[in-house]
Image (cartoon, rainbow, N blue to C red; front, side):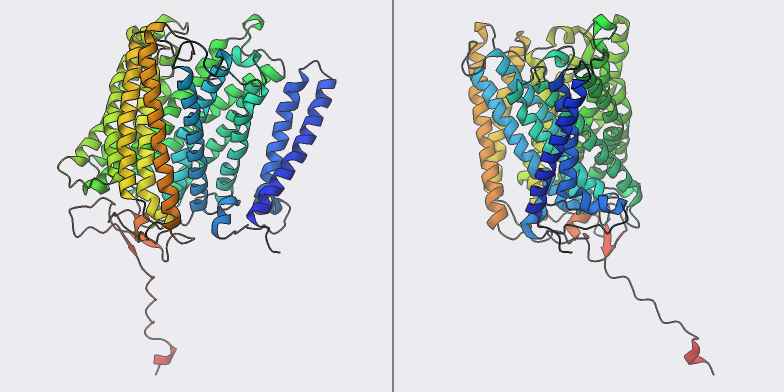
Length: 619
């Protein structure tokens, strides 16, 4: 039977979602009628669960997976051309592009919210937002940008590149991979609906008791966050299995590209730590919907419990964001310096050390939350200790470019920008790791600037470097190099002026997450806001460059950078199963300077030689 077109599948997904919503809301109302629980909360919670399942089954899960549960023949949507990006595709490359485009759009939307915040901060009085609206916009900006940081590289570039880099045809679980992406659109919709239901002013952390008692928009956020965590767990499972089980012949763990190692480390955290925050969010939802008392102090609960559960995930989650970015950084630095990754084995050890130590530092987020004083010292020491493997990666970046033949194209400029930004983020992190200074700087704009120097200055900068680097491989076309360099310098200068200003106001004591502030901070806030608008405008150059280049950019060729990793040894874009012939790995991917080094051989398998002494040779 001919499969429906991709757009018809999306239409069917919306219809099934509406049917699921009607069933779920009706069931929720029925439960509310027989209990004393708040009917709106129950209708939203149960209605969302049925809506999500209806959407997934309608958009394609039934066709490619569900039919097989009943012994029926499954149907691959197999859309062609642009429609494949709107289909429940099982091709890891299509899913990678779906993730990338979706989260770049969400990044631009989250950035627009940041511009709105900076408009309000031009003056300590009300300009366009009251305090509640400001807090909702701030909270929405935070959770969207955290989702972008978690999923853009791990969902986008990892999906597109990791199977090709290890010589595999696809990921280990293609159907689960597709489902992990199609979970994302309902998450985005739920977050964007929150302002229509009272918003949520708890910040992206959703601390109780506020997140238990405030407007219905908070429940939308909690359900979206929980669903996104489920997608992250599925992605982590897929990448760990793929990297362990599907490597090409000769692709030992010691020959993996450093980006693959970074994804492996981040996927371990995503698979394990995300389950913790999922239970934390579920407890808040049950407090709201079912009237339980996990965090109600009057009934024996503890709001501090949530902070421990949340940060036990969320500090390791920082490395779900950072580790893939560091892998991309070293990948680009090596190829554009024409040098092997410096101290490759030590970097791998550092990545795995960060995975372990990342679970042991969560309580430095609670230095001012009322935990026992005797816990301050061990968590301060562990926080300082994790800077050692992070420093190893930083020194590897410096060693990789040292005495290299630097090719200062746009991807390399963004990588060098990360080296500078991450240095600032690391140095300022020392102040927040020490109890004495953290007590004074906590909840000031110093924390905002530090966090943005590690997340935006580190991961987002290298994300753009990676987009420029692999754009020819994904699209088969080259971007405009001049526009790329304009984008970098515009973004780099504005970014540093903005957040250096926020460091200053933070040291002076200006609190974060508030719309009003003392009048002596008006001038630096005006400077910060104007520069933020300039920074926001830099992304218009990026969007214009990407759209124009994808539509009519010059043909790139298979390997415009002369790089050695496997993805550059296949066509641009790669064929459906990545290689025309199975690759055999013969050496590491960074053998620059050694003419005899060949990373992989990709050629037809030799035909078996005819056997001697057969029946035709008998006397």
